Image (cartoon, rainbow, N blue to C red; front, side, top):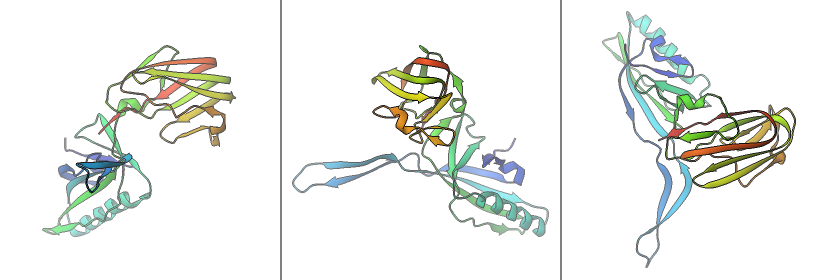
Length: 243
């Protein structure tokens, strides 16, 4: 089977695109600069505490039966890439189906006409620097005392949904220590998303009822989850990631 990639829910195979090669021009580069101080040996590190986007490109060609057929296929490719181009979409491919990226197409698309029936081009995506383990993007139900194991050397930013009522305490114990998160006045359920840095219930923000020094993280290695209060269900999307 030919190699392919899926962007915004549509496969390159559906558009007749053939892939010659895949290239990754950057991979989660740390966003920092080095500052030289006169009279001081060595440079100081000025970090923005973030990773810059990664660039992923696919070198492709588009075979066609006629010039008209090629023009139609080119229009379909452009429509696919430029629809909803102001937001990130899932990007997966056959080279590594275990992970997915979040990507945006924000470059021009130059398609060369070779032999009048083959269009050659490169599709370049700007991607969130993290590669997410696909299996960790599904909701799992967790009981108090359960351990979640983060297989990568980076703390993940989970989504957490607590179903219950009243005042509820969630604690996470890892190699970094034990951190407690207080949720006040819960009615039916509350959601907490570290990636968004928000607590909410549907479309209503609940940050004022959340008490903690920071949002919950799942550190590398073992994370022991404990919860107290009138809780009927605890659901977590771990979002394990690597570069």
